[in-house]
Image 1 (tube, rainbow over the protein chains, first blue to last red):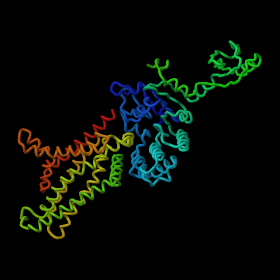
Image 2: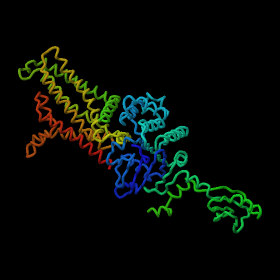
Image 3: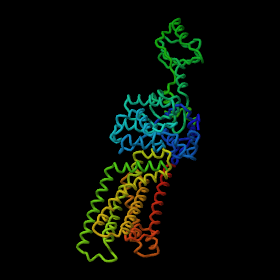
Image 4: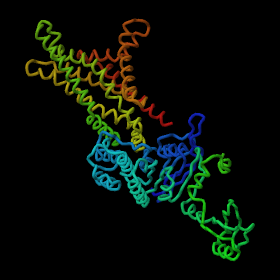
Length: 312
Length: 247
């Protein structure tokens, strides 16, 4: 069965006694999408992922993987899943080859195809030189890669990765990122992280979770488009008021610093420079500034923001 | 079904690549060898103890299996402690629970893998009485009954230990708990001797009573049924326990 929507979670809620870890999260993952799940520690990212993969029964709500409800037909739904939890689920006492062969068999890869599947996963994750080594003797970075190989060895349509780059060095992080980008051509990926550049680098859509609720959700393209939305400038002799065509509002930050919000669809930079020269305002600096992902993240997750109150 | 067999094969591999399995096998074999030698010496020194009711198979086989039951009670919790506790501790149980395999398949798979180890114990143990078959006429039926009892008892110990292993994340606690549980089931026999209204119930529930008959070569369906029920009950409990954990 081909479905365009690979994961559909509706009203996902999880309570631990009186504590609500995840509250009413809706999540949709389409084919070919990389969804970044962002949030501070303890926001409910891992809990959400556990529920999506059937490792934790939700208190409320439903999860459909590839159109199949995971609570009703867990075996069938799980065939479409590859999951890398926070701790790579490896068996330290066996070799990489033995382990991956087992994982492939466990996911129903036929004996004849298993060798090729294992070889492909090893190549994707750069594990060839450690094939015959015991997993327990590998470094943390390599164990993480084995964990990643485990999630993709059976070529599932949906791959869920919980902080895949933890414990890796910068070069490995870049390799894993390009691997994830390559995977997204044939698979859909959900990726959690609290490292912003990582999400920015690979994801096509971002979702910020805070205290178990979704506080922001948009495509990366929209986030990037917002980036060029404001102008920040510094003047030596700033006037009391700016009358420049194309500027909708002005905000003074003191010491000659100003932030301008342009009218929609206009770029008032040239006009601003011309006005500064004509009136002797002494323009020292002018740059575009917008809400970066980091600003969005910080404003939404630090303290009680208006949006939080709204959500509560 | 195929997932269960994959888990069983992998679990057997994990057991046999660990030094623990080989150490346990070596210790069992050493102690059993010692008691075998003692039994043989005793028999040779007192040939009068053999008569038409009690032959070599009884003397050596029965003696050996009676002793091994105690040894296995001590050692099997060590083999079962890691089954789930260690996987829970390291987080690798997630691999199985995310895979397209039901909890029953996971539990049965692990149990089957463990049974491979028990078979190894059994074969090593069988070598001792059967090595006498060159020199004397053995009552093979008696020895086979004893071996069957041995296997059923190991499987029962294993199932109980497996269940305890699902209760905790610490393998050592699983071992202590498993040992405690087995000892209690074992001691039910002693409680039965005390009389009282429950003494019949205790006698039926005790592991050792059912083993005694098989050890002496009496094959009774009730005993076999007891063991099978015992094993099924604890494996079912393990599945329930894992299911509770998920919610």
